[in-house]
Image 1: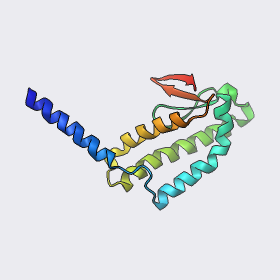
Image 2: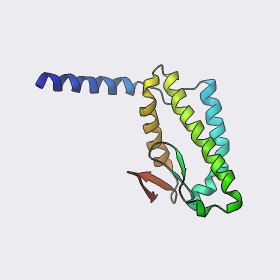
Image 3: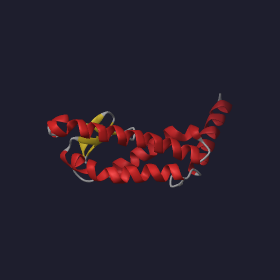
Image 4: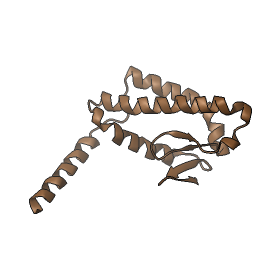
Length: 136
């Protein structure tokens, strides 16, 4: 039994060492295009984060947290922006994993970025933790 624990511990340590060598700032044309699109879209999303309509989820995405905080006439456009943002975020995580030569790292990259997005959220924005929303 002790041998099995040692092997598992060594595998976990090795996986952590390999992951620590990953480059989250890696840049390729596809990654650059995704980041540019997300940056351009941010100006449209920011007021909705500030109003509490949108929040950052624990899985690295954006969610329409309170549809009532968006005027009815704008709601469909905001939902479209959220869908575009989430599509680009999903693609970004996938592309960073591929560019590192480890597509199997996608879930870890998503988790790391989710923590980054939440950590960098402005005061007053909603963030998700453990399935619950809280105002930062």
